[in-house]
Image 1 (spheres, rainbow, N blue to C red):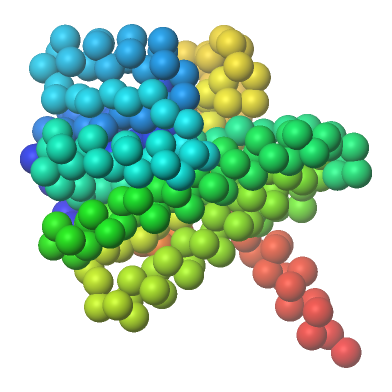
Image 2: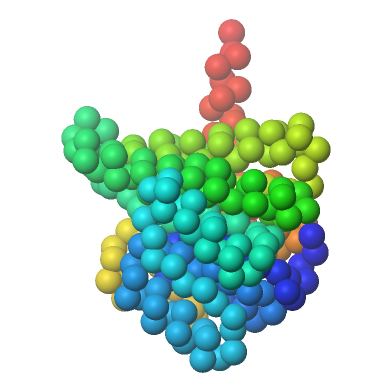
Length: 257
């Protein structure tokens, strides 16, 4: 695939806000047709209506992405509308805070369902469709720099984001072994100016962001560039390289005598 997405069909989850919405806007600007999926039905309807008013071809579907049957239905409705799928962006996410031993089991269930099972369900429902339609395309799974950092206080989130990286590695290998042309990217954002961790929080304007924070639009641009270059790992922050180097320095210490 190239960076020219004119005529593509892209499915984006977590599409009502943040990085997901920025990806949708980026694709729409380049002529793609879009399936927007999110649990937040009112906001999803509002954003989809805004985009349609500007001439975009958008199908919005409110869905619990942790529900396998619901994601199967999402895939069927997407194909019924557009006939094929070129891009799947598994981007939905949530978080819970606290020491590992204090995080409630209900929060573990919620975070695992949203952050990991949504990606599993997206792959199971959409990859067969993509393969049947030409065995080409791109799957983009959103993980986090939490998969590389020494980070406490959010162990369920950290665990699921490690899992998304591992799942993406295995998916890429499975597709290659199957002779598929579908490419896989795993996105590891740093701090992005969204209301992800604080729903309802006011988001500063792009020209007034704190140091080390990038806008959702800038993160989407990094993802698009990574896709165009067919990179497996996609990072949104240049200084992420230092975090990755520190992680593997710690790993290599395991071989010290």
